[in-house]
Image 1 (cartoon, helix red, strand yellow):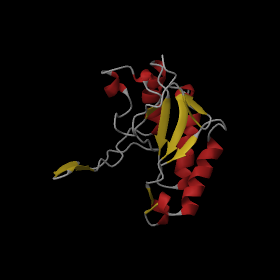
Image 2 (spheres, helix red, strand yellow; image 1 turned 180 degrees about the vertical axis):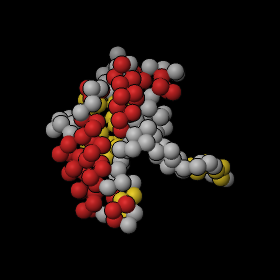
Image 3 (cartoon, one colour; image 1 turned 120 degrees about the vertical axis):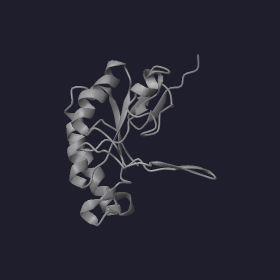
Image 4 (tube, one colour; image 1 turned 135 degrees about the horizontal axis):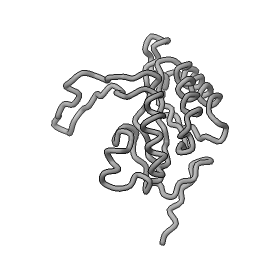
Length: 170
């Protein structure tokens, strides 16, 4: 047996295999094929404060070199996510790297705080902060495109999560 233990900062995983955010929704769909608890971590679909229906159809278009998609961060909002999806991930023994986003820096902090206060927070091994999202308070400029905006988001998330929770900016 080969030891596949992987360490990312303070986060230790049994192996380096993780899903990409959004590629397997919030786990139940993928779990039909194999136990998601076998992954090093399951990276959730990005969750925001409020429910979002995402973009209207068509959401995908075939091109000569593959496909383009634009889902628009469809999701249930943080309250339903922690009560349903995160609770389910915890119930099957999965380690969750939870992806969060917000329309404002403060909303990122609010989502992080709600996540940290959830009964299923024990399943969280880290938080992915999706700063590739548009900052509505700053004319829709992407948070990651401005160092001060990115720094503010990460600082607010850091303040609202337990100190031992790893944060990864995306």
